[in-house]
Image (cartoon, rainbow, N blue to C red):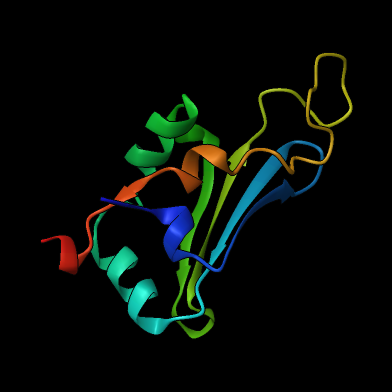
Length: 108
């Protein structure tokens, strides 16, 4: 299995306001993008499992074919900058998604 982080050109997280976190995944290869999209691994259920959240916390999971990427927006457990927040910018939250195993054709 190949990890999503090995296939994507950009895989990042950031705040989408103080109460939401956005995960952006962009590819520099249409082949890799189509393979990941077709894998069926990018689902609300997968995101819930990776991040330990309920489906209601996922606000958006959208593929953008024209941009060769997808975006996931989820609720933050703690608002940005509040006591107990360990990542004010939301920039450290992409690791679980980066490690997601994707079945590639050549692995077979």
